[in-house]
Image 1: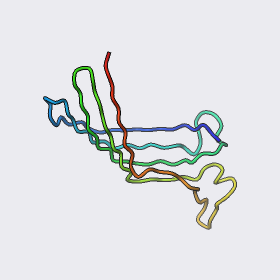
Image 2: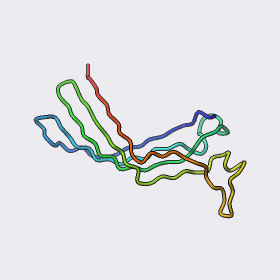
Image 3: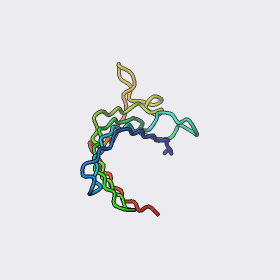
Length: 117
């Protein structure tokens, strides 16, 4: 097994829906993934490298010192890349190395609640 590096980048906009209630709508895109080779440490361990690009709508609420947010990223594109083990040991076709299995979610639900001190 390998403790892999992971990355996530997100960018978008928030629009005030009902200002007096503190409700907002967010629209964002995100890319997240696991690299084939790590920048720090060993790369030889087991991993499932690849990345997913998602569209991420969400709702936000702010009231006083409280805030909450619900996000629902929906995957638009997924790319499972061949790992170092795939390249080294197998699953090779006439078109090159065939990546192994992967587990990309079609969608995710992310909820958060925060209290500002």
